[in-house]
Length: 285
Ligand code: C2E
Ligand code: MG
Ligand code: MG
Ligand code: MG
Picture 1 (spheres, rainbow, N blue to C red):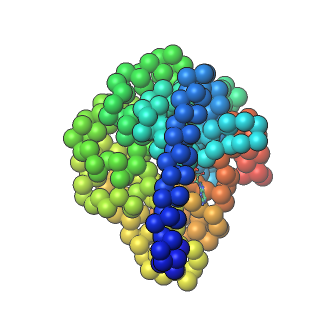
Picture 2 (tube, rainbow, N blue to C red; picture 1 turned 90 degrees about the vertical axis):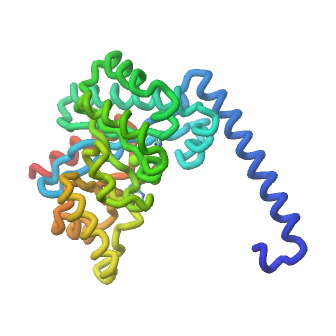
Picture 3 (cartoon, rainbow, N blue to C red; picture 1 turned 180 degrees about the horizontal axis):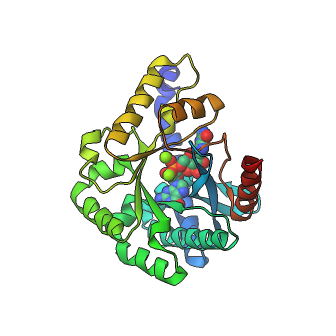
């Protein structure tokens, strides 16, 4: 820790900085290789989204992983920023979208009965690529119906680039694509401001999830966010639901959807199919 080490601070920090800079370069170089080779190292995992009043599975969120070798899987927080800095997020994001549509259609053929698939989109994709064209091309190529696709955009990103982003989102929504605001509550936007944006759903960030029945002020916060969002005619989905207590609190307060380890972590497509079949069987009993 810098405070205790006195004159070694500087040394410590430069060593740290250098190794961070090297790490960053290594990741970027490797990412460039993986994207230019075939994109096969990028695997999409899926996490179910549950309708709280019926218990039905409404959809799934697509979450990418980088399987750099059989033993090494890198989580998205470790390489999405590098993909954004290098622009590699554009081909990578398009591939993730394509794979998610293909997997969704495959589930549909198996009779899984989900309404939609949610795909995370980076602000770099929205602003720099001909994003609308890319999406249209993937939908056409995979024969995916637009209304089965939801795109997740983070709240913090939305607040930065208002005008242009709002117009792209509006065009996407006009095609029938649904728009969700991800990590809601972390970006300091007012709910009133959201009223002017083309949005179907709010995803409350998992940091807002009350730990237990004793977290009274956390409960007040999340219940007021749910009711305000519902008053704006937005559906609410809670992220990071890990306990029965949390699911009950959300249901009681009219939150429509929930996603979290209570139901399932993100899993590969073939496991997801089995998970849905088992879940549906258990709910029917
Ligand atoms: P996110 O979109 O907010 O995704 C939710 C994250 O919370 C996921 O982490 C998920 O695995 C994790 N999570 C789900 N349920 C629980 C729970 O009950 N408890 C806890 N503690 N965590 C839970 P993951 O998969 O590591 O993804 C991290 C972030 O990386 C995502 O946050 C998203 O911002 C980004 N990301 C992931 N896939 C993509 C992608 O395909 N494209 C882009 N642009 N970003 C992506
Ligand atoms: Mg998300
Ligand atoms: Mg989120
Ligand atoms: Mg996040």
